[in-house]
Length: 228
Image 1 (cartoon, one colour):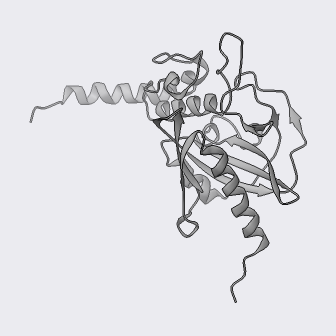
Image 2 (cartoon, one colour; image 1 turned 90 degrees about the horizontal axis):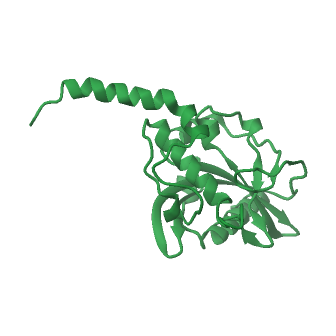
């Protein structure tokens, strides 16, 4: 007789919780378990009723113990950070590196058989070798039973932070990693206080080599451009 192991039940519970929470802000495509080789979900961010063509991948882990080691609240996304190390297989990390969209690890906390909290970790800076796994915190994504899609930074710009802010900048990282400059309008994602078609120094500087490499390739091929 086949068994439905407790670990499998817990994992499925966590995935279902993440899917239900994100469905208000994303079109969530759940990947069949038999076809899961490193991602549990492929999502497209939705602003109100408008799909944005901004994709991101999610891997879900589930446990019963909340995170306890707090760090300072992030001054960019305005979310509470926590320290936690979760081992991801090297084969999975290699798989994630091949994607041209951001990847996030979501951690679900189940207490007394009820999902209570969700944390997430940004893996794009890690995959691009811009930071180390142990240096990138988990961020508390659920507050007062609400997903922190947008978080107020100032009274003037009430939607500058939250998960969507990290999605925007990690999407920008993915473009820069391919040698491209921009292309995402943060206003289309529902963000406020961030501009389209500008270079954000803290991100742009990390990818100068990639962007310069693309420019040199363009100059090279421009000289040998032929007409059909």
